[in-house]
Image (cartoon, rainbow over all chains, first blue to last red; front, side):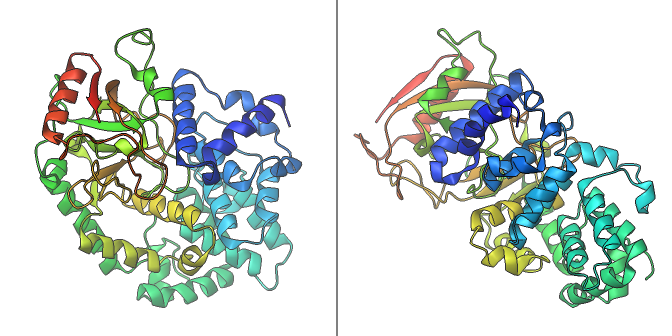
Length: 202
Length: 257
């Protein structure tokens, strides 16, 4: 881990950890606004150099806070690092929040603006890499892919939906299985649900 | 942003509720007209600690220093998720429990899409929306309830492109906050791709430290006062007039407890 990020850990924990109290969280949010107004404090953190082992340097809420604070001009968290952040917990909510923070990066949205409907036509990303790895692993029980389908539908932004459509191209049965469990809640058939998700005929 | 996870009827009802609140506008949802700046823009107030309130001082050694935008609260535990939390200046001391420095800023709410979370019907629509999310059970039942709440509120506001949530105070002091009358605002800072952002708010302009309150509150439920108030009831109308005058003349007013 680089020195700037080591120094920033204290700040990030106080900005994000509710156990410090709302006053402390707010004071650091204000300091963050001051830093953001004057310069780009993210650049010095060299986030693109993060290694998987850096995950334990901060509590997850601090990483989530930082990931959610990233703007278009900021580096995206490296895929190997995100993989470790995601995989070192079994808690489905934390895994959803990690995926959500990563999938919402404005830079990712920009890179996926013109992405095609299949994986080869989409730029690299942590989520794409994870989906391809799960497909390659022939995740026969489908648990990993099922979780990712649910995550992509739950996040629902443009990159998520493009990744879902690409996965649907590769593993329609898995996608339809998840949609089948959700469709009754929406009051729709799987076919209607697919249309609402713009997945095409299936 | 895909909203396919809920029935069309609920989606339509939420959209209609937002359109209705937006049609009324902020002025229509508040009990009185919004106090305005010399530029003719409505004024809003955010209280912060003295440690950083001085940054916004319009007079004194910090006067010439650049003023950051009002900050967005991005930690978990904020009622409506990641947002810039303010009160309309018509409620001048409602949020004083959060610090003795009142930072006033102007904004144009005329084009804000509004969700009125003070309205019981709209509240129910949101609860119904939560219950139909694919991760609903996990998010509702998790021990990480504040993170889950932040995720859900942010997602709801993003899906419906809500610029401002109007909600009743859920923290208060007996004298300074009137939960049955006051309304607080969670105002969204959007990123370039239509997601919720943090950092400085660009919605609020020309923030200035306009009032310093001679009061301290305990950091506990009910936020009991430690000094006053010495005169009851607090004259909120006069307080608003004084703060508007201080803002428009680049002064700092003081309020005794």
